[in-house]
Image (spheres, rainbow, N blue to C red):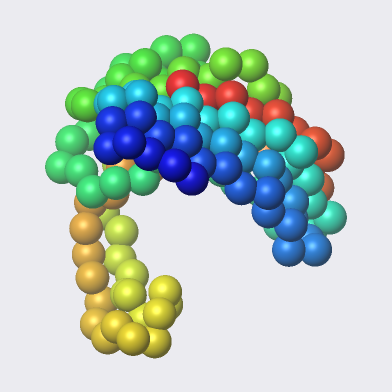
Length: 132
């Protein structure tokens, strides 16, 4: 990826043998546009894209016709795509950093997290996603 500190771009071409996706992210000040294509999997587990995940003390607001229009300082618009399900959640989660890396302790951590995820379903074939 590249950035001048205000504008930025990054992309990935991911393929681990079970799941594949091409994704690009464009950053314009406070806005982000994410584009995904070629999202496919042969796994029996659902393939999920996380559009947003951050610590928040706010509750989810403004969900209209299955489309989140705003929650505090966050808004998302789906521009096309064929996602089977959008999930928006703001609740307390528990985990530990040791699950991410052995360099950190396994002490339980609790925090309220806001998440917005897109479920592409089980065994998607080239599912497109455009998020703004």
